[in-house]
Image 1 (cartoon, rainbow, N blue to C red):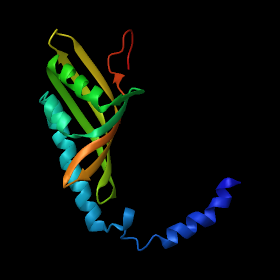
Image 2 (image 1 turned 135 degrees about the vertical axis):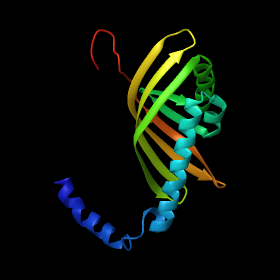
Image 3 (image 1 turned 60 degrees about the vertical axis):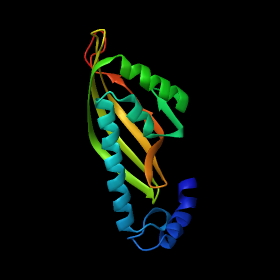
Image 4 (image 1 turned 120 degrees about the vertical axis):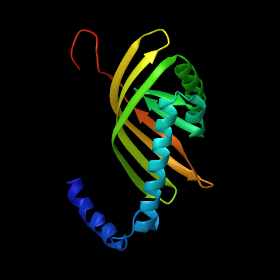
Length: 165
């Protein structure tokens, strides 16, 4: 019943939203395409920092208000900074493949990027960690600079103990 009651509101909102070439916050298609292209460059800069095991480059891509939901646990900026430094220092090799990248501009200064990762990590102690999962990043531009404000990632073992994935 609620769905039926909301249909006129949705129809009215859609009719008033403007011409089809307009997007979120009144942005035009060209502006949204520019946002998507800029955020895609930022996503690949994040990927390069990860694979280079460069914790400081990763940290520079996070706003001070950054928060994350990592495997169901909330992580704040300070935890992310300390965790990145500790994690990267313990790695010998960090290979990650990101596929199915989709960038969705929400306006001239905000976009969501989502992708599926597949990691193969070798620790300095010789351990092998292989995982896969989805990641979503909320990017925000301030003063012409794109950084991540929020992230969500879930890690699923590729080689779970005692069985196939």
